[in-house]
Image 1: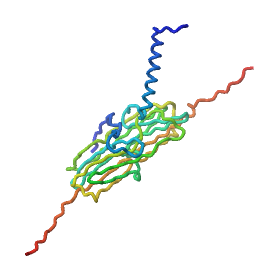
Image 2: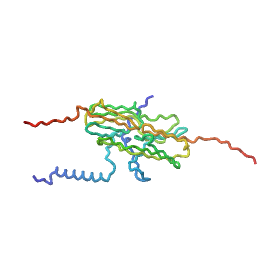
Image 3: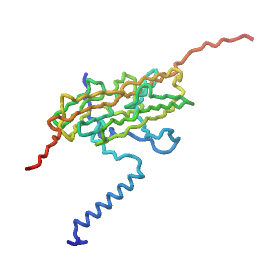
Image 4: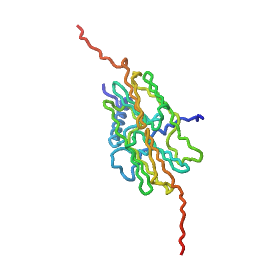
Length: 137
Length: 148
């Protein structure tokens, strides 16, 4: 069934820059907050983040005290012999943090990066039933 | 001829010069480059020299068969569609920030393009299009002969 898709709105072309404040970045480059979709299924939470220009080996995902931080690094783009004639976006790294609930099984997080899109699969903790032995006495 | 201080054109030139100086003063302190407002999705950058143009666009997560690049004369048309995720029953969004849908950008380039030599690559979600200038459009050097 084809779905009629509407036109992407104009303001969605602009990237949101990380505001000053909080920890300073060590690299002297601009940093942007990647746009992310988050949806929940029965057994997982999925995070999809747009990070164009980032290859799979340039992604850093760290998990510390229930905070998941995504870092994507982009190489400098400067073609030889050309001068910039018109620019609508600047190139920079990406960073975003999410706090996870204790619903997430942190050992089983998976990440995949293709075509500038990072997909994080955060499985929920599955309820386990334990039988508790009763000792006499 | 003495310039008349009440001459409107002279007055405007002074204002224009002052405006330019103020702008360049701010530019020294403002580290962010001057960006044009994006004319639509996706945002595109253009690099140029006398022999060709390079256009880059940030288009993550687009399938190549959903992308359509057309060049005619000095006009570049980029259009396509970014499909949203299809969610099963019972799945629900917490956040939805990524733009999805149809997009189309039309660019007028500074000169005619050699259409047969246009190349486009898509890597890590960034589209690079190289558009060499048409041979017929390149300026020709005119030899000046000394008149006898």
